[in-house]
Amino acid sequence: MAIEVRIPTILRTYTDGAKQVEGAGSTLGELFDDLEVRHAGLQARLMDGGALRRFVNVYLNDEDVRFLSGLDTPVKDGDAVTILPAVAGG
Amino acid sequence: MRYDNLLQSLGNTPLVGLPRLSPSPQARLWAKLEDRNPTGSVKDRAAFYMVEQAEKEGRLVPGSTILEPTSGNTGISLAMVAKVRGYKLIVVMPENTSEERRQLLHMYGAEIITSPAAGGSNEAVRVAKQIAAEHPDWVMLYQYGNEANARAHYETTGPEILADLPEVTHFVAGLGTTGTLMGAGRYLREHKPGIAIVAAEPRYGELVYGLRNVDEGFVPELYDESVLTTRFSVTSADALRRTRELVAAEGIFAGISAGCALHAGLAMATKAAKAGDRADVVVLVADGGWKYLSTGAYSGTLDEAEQSLEGQLWA
Image 1 (cartoon, rainbow over the protein chains, first blue to last red):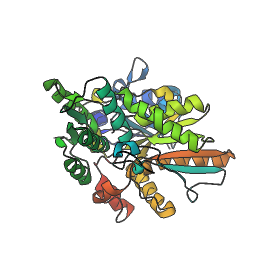
Image 2 (image 1 turned 90 degrees about the vertical axis):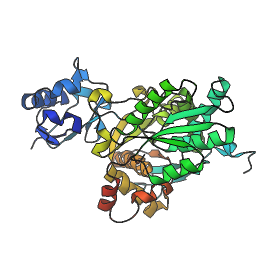
Image 3 (image 1 turned 180 degrees about the vertical axis):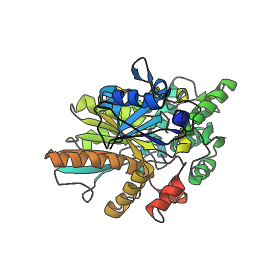
Image 4 (image 1 turned 45 degrees about the vertical axis):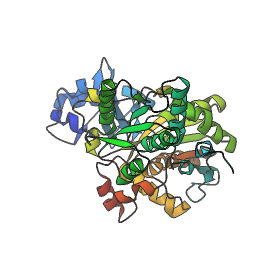
């Protein structure tokens, strides 16, 4: 088991086109560190200065991690993490 | 009830219980039926407030042209208000929106400029800003950053909910411009400490997220994270399933964004029921299902409906 991470179209250049990748870690921040090892450059698109980028939304099992504990949010095997760019509605 | 004109009939929409969908008699769901507004959506509130404010400021004068980026409902509401008040309306709308929205806008006399599907509303906003710069005499009300949008909900939607259901514990609504959640959310937080304000954000098909890079993302200027308790991303499949449950269990024929909000509302109510807590969860039904019939959302299997909605902006 691992943590499943869904990658949006615009970031698939870092994952050889893969829609979904797997990673490990006990927090979201650790998971992103782990992803960086296999998908170099991805982390810099997600984070800036140790925080999530303004126009990047990350959901842990469909809940926005900014309302959990951000990069310190605990994650575990079997969780699904979804990364999406921020889009408008209305 | 009698009103002098259509605009005065705005708001004061029914709040109806959802006894069959509620997890228990102590964890109850309620639907605020915003399809009972003049053009059939919650956006009538924001459109009316934004136009009134611009008139007060002297930005809108008889004969003015209004320009607005919209995925549909705001455009339809503005088109009605513009018609009644004597303005011309030009909307910038993504091409991946339902045919009904186009027909309604044309019916009200609005002009439609179509923006590319990829990038969804972000692209419509970008195109509208460009056009606005070329036509400084046109008035862009700009729902994403217009305080009157949120104020409409602070002054009407929020107070209506609290008056009808003083015991409200959760307010759940779709997240688009963020106006509904910011306005009603602020009002409810001020008057009902401890209330949970929950955002349900539509998760569209990949086309909509087809930006060139992450820096092209968009967060509405109205958005203030501190108003929300939490925020859920709801897939088209979940939103469709709940939209159909709303018809099947409660007889409410609603738009797909209502299913999106219901999905998050049900999660809240179920969690409360399991913990043995009392809950009164208000779910905002932004519009009725009429404008989405052509999308196939209500016919065939759920898989078929999901297929035909792929890439469409359904909220």
